[in-house]
Length: 395
Image 1 (cartoon, rainbow, N blue to C red):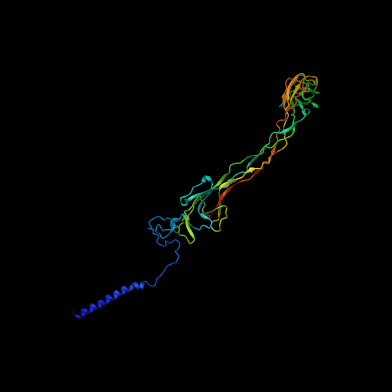
Image 2 (spheres, rainbow, N blue to C red):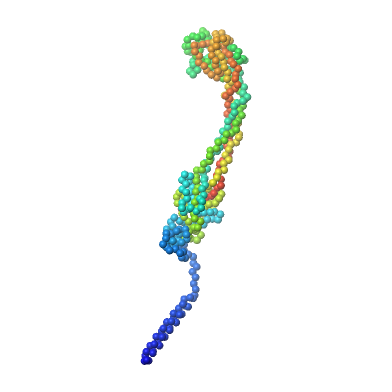
């Protein structure tokens, strides 16, 4: 072999050896020094691999980048029906979509707020005070006025017509029942009845006798006993209904630190998310400022005081029958003309004379009535078992 070929082979071997040594030395140079990356993940980034294929529609509450656009839940524009909100304050529960409206407009719960059993309550209680009716029993212990207080009047016109002349007969002092009396009279004498403005009642004048009336014998004294108060209560009625529908317990991500991604309520629900707490409570400081209180029961103690009383009896009368006679002579009760009830009027025919009269003993007082008073309403109806909801403003 020539010396030139030997020289070429030695040089080639040297180059190969150098290349191999470079390859072996390279890994050792890349292992040192070690580096770590612990900066916080920017809001809305995909972050670590979630295992998503990136081929599906974005699920806005599972903390994953389902559609592969590098944005998670609330950070993804596809989640326009979701909103970032502050955490629920200690002692409160949430989050809720709240309907506060007329009972007939109850919308039920939407799918995004279907976690658990919804709360249903009421507010705006309509319950007027109790109606307290007082009444009185019949008048008892009444007496009758004397017969001599009865006034008998003869008129030249029928009972319901306007008269020109009328003649009150004289009162009879100490008039005894069934005793004939008649110190005076009106003497029509059966002559033609021609009304005249001459009101002479004598036989010579032949007055026109068309009707006769007698005043009632009034009952006096006595008293009425009050009846127990009668209580009526209209059924309470709620005017507003509250329905609170809960969002899923595991909220989504894609929000700044301390905030979570939850569904956004839509009409007819309140425009902002709500939190809840049993009882009637003040809203906590922060974003949840609009207070709604609903009740699940009613306490109703509407009633009436048993304070009914009765005034003095009035309008009581003692029924009595008076018999009138048409004899020409005074104090004569032979020719019976008509029977007349006290407090009544009777038309007469034939223009008779009205002279003698007898009266029966007055009957027992009747018709007396007492005006009731009292019956004071007490108590009220109010909501029971309250629950407070505090909501964010619609903005």
